[in-house]
Length: 195
Length: 199
Image (cartoon, chains in turn red, yellow):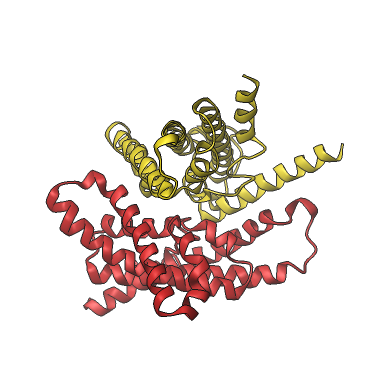
């Protein structure tokens, strides 16, 4: 198979078949917390996409050009989380300086992203799967698209749920998780789309 | 002593990190496919949780206030790496089952939340009580979910068949079952709380 087709399959499998939220259970905190309105979910999705791609690129170089030559593989987790924390701070400062409008739209989500397990998860998965730089970028893009889709789906259902009559003890989070379970059932249908 | 038990109990029910505060859900949902995995994950989490609380509270006087969060992260990441290496060396099968979720203990919001919200403001003994309490709260939540999913999904508990004629529904071992299981647990807890407060 040619390179482009391979990348396309990687992208689709990251976005739909192995959806980060429904199949891998990463990034559940923002998934539950940020999915009350569609607009908020879009902002969070954009911020995550941005940081995830940047983090994938930077950790790729940190891992293959610093940790591997120095034989410091056991420092992987510490190094990656520090890189991500610094990166988020840096991105926040740059955006605030150069584009106040973008900062207003994305600013409140950026600090939250440091402890978003999807970012660290994707950088670790990139290493586990042995992705090269281009594959790592495509994978990060696919994962963040999947995350954004999941957020928007749940947000649009929740906007309607707020008008429905739900038994007292199912209100709030329990009904959100039942909805998420049904969405996960739908995403199970994507299994077998590609091998 | 009374204080000690107050903080211990607090983490188990009133501030149960998983079912009440709703943080650190990722590992709970992902790893609770069987009771065995759930117990393994619970113990790995407890190790990092308790030692992070102990270290943060005892280093309290020398941690500069401005850079406390990066220091917490480094402390937590160190203990996570220790757990990661221990499990991969002595329990290779568990290591395979838990996979990426061991290194991801670093970004577990419960641990950093307790470091910032509790250990940084309390002494060593109180932080120990809090760490143990939160750990027990985490373990019972993840094991309860593991019990539900393993029984409904494959009809067994700890690999033993419980009811011969029971026909398991595979979907409970798969991702949707995790969401429904946790919704069920949260719903039950909420229902019980409402019953108690109405009395």
